[in-house]
Structures are given as structure tokens and as C-alpha cells.
Image (cartoon, rainbow, N blue to C red; front, side):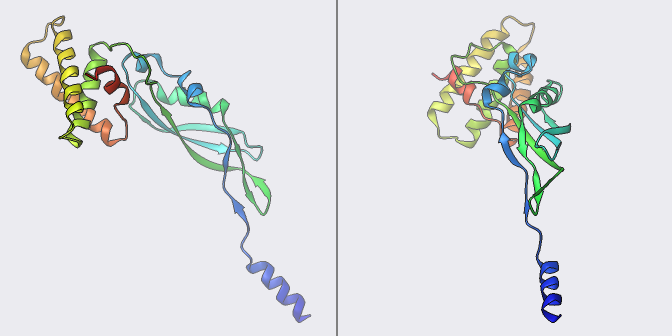
Amino acid sequence: MLSAVLTAMIIMLTPPVVTIPDWRHQPTPDEVRSRYPSKAEKDWVEGKVILRCVVLSTGRLDQCVVRSESPADYGFGEAALGVTRLMEMRPRTVDGAAEESEVDIPVDFRLPITNAPLPDMAGTLRCYGMIAAHSRSLPKDRVLKRTLAEALRRVRGLSAFTPWTEADLQAQLAAAEADGAKAWREGFNDDRCRLVFAP
């Protein structure tokens, strides 16, 4: 009798074996890129989205919602929701039994770094801001300084086709630098911009 009670107590004190959801199929960068919002691609904007989804006991994702989207107003959230059709996970298990659970899923939208055409004014300003932020973090990097100078030369060249005064141009450059610094802090990189404007 005592051994049966001890066995029952040990079973009750043994914590359950829990596994967390894990990827069964994750979309490739090309699959994510195929859903890239066109306005963001035209403006050379990269994005980050955090989705919250329910992982069903089958591993399918359900009830996905956008928790955060950066930057807003480019359609990254909607595009990320479209990518969920390509995702499948191994469900959470408790003592071997699959059960539903919630997960947060990051989706990064990155532009390809290949034979990129020169961007328009908005893209050039965005690149100038990103390269300026990078340059501030590595002030002695000569190649980066020359790349920044090339981006600035392109901005000045394009500004000749705008009604901007020098003060307007300086305001645009200051805004681009502020946006670039914010994007740099959020983890966006300037690889594509540096490739296009490298001396």
C-alpha cells in the first residue's frame, strides 16, 4: 500500500514534458519577397512585422493578427499575413499530446542586393539617411564616407528637378538623416544602398 502511494506521489510530482512549437515549413526569403508591397519596393523601404498566430494541433496557423508593423502605411502587415499560408509548425505538446498554442512570428521584408537600379528621389534620400547613420557609427571608414558623398551628390543632382530651395534641400537631408538613424536603431541595414552608391 505504501509503495502504491509513493508511486502515485512521484507521478503527481513529475512535471509534464512540454515541447514548444517549432518550424515544420518556413517560407524562403524568395517566397517572402514575392509578396513584397509594391510601393515599399519602389520607395526602397524594408519592413518588419510581428504576427501573433494560433498554432493548431495539426500545425496549421490560424487566427493570425498583426501585432506590430514597421514602417506603417506600406502594407507590410497585410503582406505578412499573406505569407502565413506558406507556414507550418510542429504544435506544442504536453506529455506527447499536441495542443493549440499562441506564437509570435517575426517576418522580415528585405530588398535583394543585386544589380539594383538607381532609386528615385525618395529612395535616394532614404539611402542617404541610412548611409549617414552607418557612417556615424564608423566615422573613420573612408569607403563609407565616399559612399555617403556619392549618395549626397545624387540627391543634389535630383533636387535640380524639384522646386526646392537650398533650405528645402537641407530640411529634406536632415529628415532623411533622422529617419535613417531610427531605421538603423531598429536593425535595418544599408547593404543595398551601399552597393548602389559605392564609389
